[in-house]
Length: 473
Ligand code: NAD
Image 1 (cartoon, protein in one colour):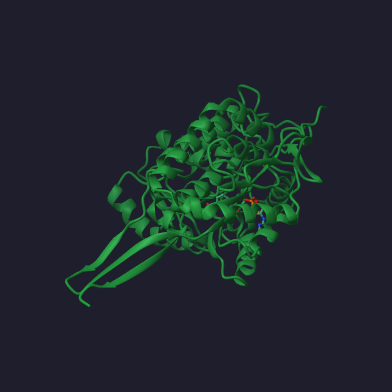
Image 2 (spheres, rainbow, N blue to C red):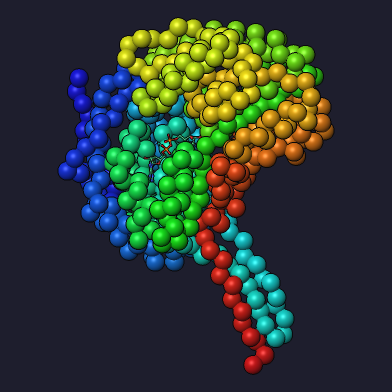
């Protein structure tokens, strides 16, 4: 097979290769199909230096000018959507149409996020003094992204960081570097040199970035265990941090719902992107009166869902993205099988060396079992019975995580009362996975801290500066 190796990093506005490369594997067959640069320490230094050099001019431009460039960046993505989508499916595994949704969604997000503006407060404006607070950029932002939504989660960081007047060094996951490298290449035409740098490399690159003295702020999305390492590493130089970490999100299904309308939505909320979604439903609590109806409908949808190579037109869900995740899921599945909990499974999956996992619903496992307590981050969904609302809220809140949750209930007042008692940053009522550029998204507990999106998310990349002027001297 012809291995593609012409992907370049973007440093100071130039395309740059590296002395060594990392393998990029197609998860649909487990084979290396491309090589990506493995950034050296010196190249990272160069990227940070160029971001620092570009910062004063970028920060001094009017915000409307930066916003215009972000809109142009969105247009550049849209213009190359087909190419990016094909690359996305090869490196990520997600079926083509769903991959296209992420590319176009990221283009839309760039446009919408560019409309945000930081507040400006006049605290006092009297004869004797004027006190005002404005918000200023921080400097150089290090953006570290995971592999599950490689483009959109990078854009969640790049857009507000640049809009605020910072410059950026982006690092994608080594499992999905290619779309980010391509993004850097496309945006060389849009942003001045040094404003947006894209580097990539093996597991040693993230720690080099979080310890780098030239970086002012880290915006990190990934697992809770890595988030802890990032925080430790950032402590020595007191870097500002946003940590968007893991989740073990629950959904509560009340007995008054219309099962035929709701169960397909619950299925997608759990299994979309082969369940590799931080805000997917990963624990499904169903009232005992409707439990069997929900379980049987979910199992029927799983049996009708084709899991396969994302380039095939009728594939609905792709493989798991990488071998590490695949092996974790097989180990979790073995623990379920050893526990004797009943399982219901979807159709057979290809056995061609790709990282395919059969869709699995675990039927009422014990609350304390691994499959309920751990974040699966793959297509293994435990569903549990409940009879008492106080009890189910307690079980949902007992998790160490606090990212998002869903309540399915016709009675909106009752659903809202339940939502108010859930210890998560987001709650959906009779919907799922809905996020907006103008609305804050934040985790609680071990799901991290800080905010992405909305004006609160923009302010994560800014610092308040209060100016006191004595007027009557
Ligand atoms: P991960 O923590 O393994 O990796 C995330 C990123 O951190 C990658 O770019 C990786 O190369 C980098 N990294 C690894 N070690 C590092 C270190 N020591 N210092 C700095 N960077 C380092 O996570 P993942 O497997 O890529 O992503 C899956 C996890 O991300 C899941 O737990 C999921 O819930 C979480 N996630 C959270 C959100 C959210 O918004 N809260 C969104 C998506 C994914």
